[in-house]
Length: 59
Image (cartoon, rainbow, N blue to C red; front, side):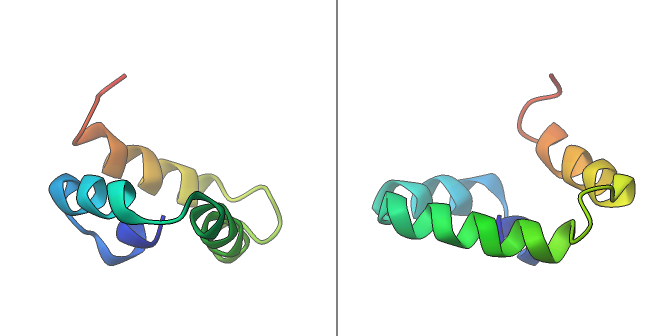
C-alpha cells in the first residue's frame, strides 16, 4: 500500500514484498487503509487504487 501512495512501479512492489516481514506488512496496510479510507466510504480512493492495480492486471 505504501508503494501505491508513492506511485512505485510493480517491480519495486514485488521486490519489497519478497523481503518484508508479513506482520509488519499487515500493520502497514491497516495504517494506510485508515489514511486512504478513514470513513470506509471513499469511492475516489477505490477508483484511484483500481487504476493503479490495472497496470499490473486489468481484472
